[in-house]
Length: 121
Length: 110
Image (cartoon, rainbow over all chains, first blue to last red; front, side, top):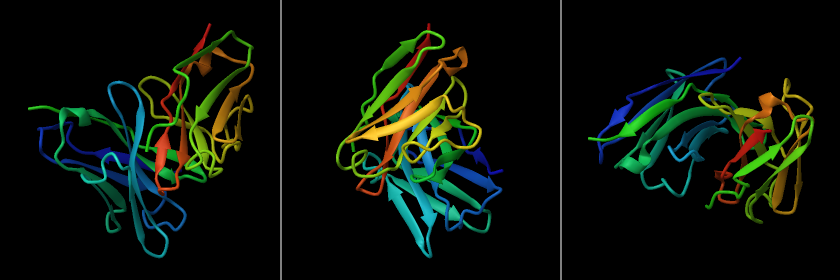
């Protein structure tokens, strides 16, 4: 059974960088069949896919256009985890952030517990 | 990439069937059979209900079914039960190699 455990601060100051990690158990971040996503839910309620990384003989990184200039998702094979960095945050980035495992073809089956991140000074 | 369009709310009485639509474009829903559906109860992480347009993961009730026609995917819940009251989201793969969620639908059991 795959489990995802998120970690990171719940409060970030405007213009700073939001950083979260997601530790994977029961699968490998380097799996040739997996994909590792970051998704958020804004206070208004909607879900937004932010990006993903996956390994298919080499690493791939795909990001939503809305955050492409500010986002980095990195795998950490030594710790079997992946991370989210979102630069230059504003109050509009305040949301519940989820890490999630799964592909477009098979569905996103595994979810972290969620981290509420507030952007405020 | 704009969010896929879902009705804001759908309601039905216990035992009835309801259908939630998810409308995209020829660059996402219409282009790939990579549409999945998620159920989200308040305070809980989303749960995968349908993947690949019409496939149910193990453990999901067969009261949930999915289909697609053109640029619109649909989720049908048959024999509506109180526990089905939740928010439902679709998601599709896109021609930009990204994923895009629907706007979400609140299902109310009357």
